[in-house]
Length: 388
Image 1 (cartoon, helix red, strand yellow):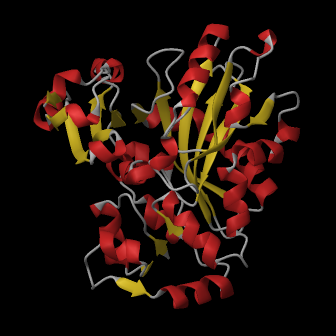
Image 2 (image 1 turned 135 degrees about the horizontal axis):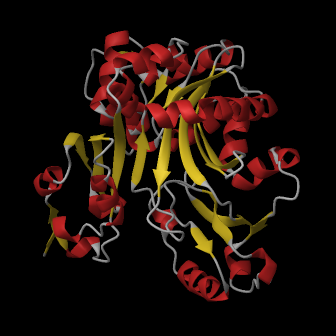
């Protein structure tokens, strides 16, 4: 069953729902996004009855905006509790603290931030909203000078205006120690027996040690096969602690030089936001992640990589890091952007004035042509921006 909500649903996901005759809950938000009466719409009351009476029904949400609907309607299931365990980063740290003895973390209010003096032995550390999304409001603090800048920026934060409080809430922040290592994002689900199934592993590239953005995520044969066994073992422990069954999730981790996995966050009941990583698996591996979760199928990675070309598949997030205010931008040259990639598979435009993101690009890159990924990673996008 699918619970669709703002801000976006992809044509690929809609097509998947339609071709498989999957049930889709007829909320106002879903109806506003999808104008297709031929879908297998189920009214909200009947959907709630089915979900309450049949715990084995797999539910998928395209957006964390849907958490509010689940909180209102499915209190008698394990879903609200499981969602809250992961959305609240402090509660998540509490859940796994025995797996990471000595790991430093603490809750802090916006008011307390202004009076907080970090212990010099705590640098570097990360501060971020306890309930967050899309790397918004995330800062890496290396020294006292960095901390003063963060204090000043957080005096004026308006992040809560962009997404609902269930998705992004700056009422509380969490401070936690910074983890060195390579960062990865994982799409997966727990089946009806509580076993983990990996659907994608993406390397999150950064331009510098201070970069906290979401510009480039890449997947490939090597990225998947080099990490899947380690990640499966880690996620199985998380699922056992939370009692997860019939549950999809999008997880972000760092893996240190010793190969130990350190979780950053777990995003419940969905894959990557804005239908990104869920759609990308089809381009990269030839299978449909939404179908695999709903039908409880598992990728045959050996067979997949025998048939697929050894290419790198990436999602480019066109966040506005130009320094130019959205109100001063008249347009974005997507055609020029497309020319800068070897094979731009799909360009997904967004309302940049509302979401501060120009869109998303799905690209296929030869392994010997990673220069194009490095260039977009370091770009301020000004060459594509049209000013008023």
